[in-house]
Length: 486
Image 1 (cartoon, rainbow, N blue to C red):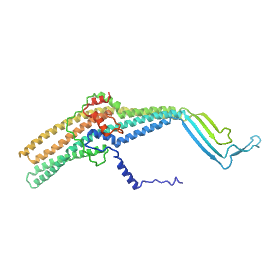
Image 2: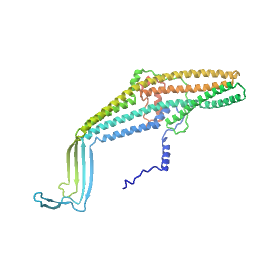
Image 3: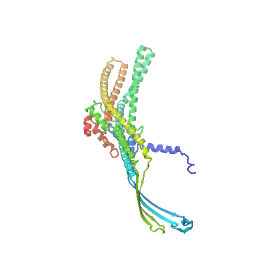
Image 4: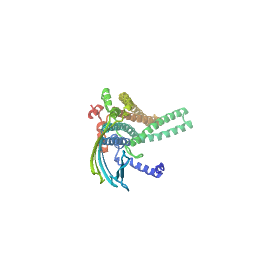
């Protein structure tokens, strides 16, 4: 009746409010405060140390490890200690009757006290269960390794996302004030052009064409500004900073792209197939499936139970109040024989699926390696083009500024070229961030961990130093050599 009276109980609004309050204070708890402008390498270090997606994968790995530890105990025999007390208001008595004559052959008697204390310590071990538990433990160990590969995959994704967001956020901080000031000037210029159009101070078509050019450039500028402004919010989320928290970035000088990719495509393919988390995960799943085939065969075997125990009883009618007991028992579920063919078919089908997945991943990973290289080369070409366009636009603007000083160029033309200059500068910065992102994609495609990820014991400063060691100024070949990948 008590069970039937149970009904679902939802959280109260006060409980939800308290939980939300606690969660808001917990998400950024125990983090090292930012004490100055953030560099790229510090941003990566903070993301690896505090990013909640990474912590989720780390917790998944810890869960897999604890499950593995628990599975080891299944290998041990069972050691059970029992103690008990039995009582009754009347003695347990009985009599006997002869089956031949039908007469009572024994007076009513008892062989048990009314109050009895018993204790027992027994050791039992099922040999079949031991074999199956051993296989399950090995499978749990492979699941730990799978969780580790998932963590590596998240690390590579976080690093790539941080690099992309960082360089775009740098561009935003470098240009934001100039963009806002220029947009104010442009708005005034558009209003003045409209007045000229209304008052017929110039040909209407000339005024409208000028307005269209300004509005078009303004629209493009606002779209670029929107993308750049979001980058700093995304970077803060990756570093697990509280939304809205102000922080500064180190604004490096614009330099030429120095990252070199001096390693052959064949070696890159080989490294990717050796190190990519996806391939390793499928390999571990295949090993788990092979262990499942062994478990299926083992389950056909008869089970052998071995037991040994020490018992004690306070029953005064017993000739021996304490004794040792031991024995063995064999049991065999014959129906498992009929189950084996279906089990084997299921294991074989899964093996084929995993093999097909591994081969598909092999082709996809080799393709990604070449795509990442092609993207890197393409981004370098785009960067060089953006740099040339920026320098050319800069020279044009210098000529126009000289013309304005000499009263040979109108203010309207200067504003238009200043906007073009700002668009060129933003695209120049975006092209640089694309190169950095493409370079990070090469590492992601190879599945290599270029830095230690023991984030629990390392401070942000030491993590920053380790990350900078592998990324700052080294070619890809040098980085791989320093990591002893070859």
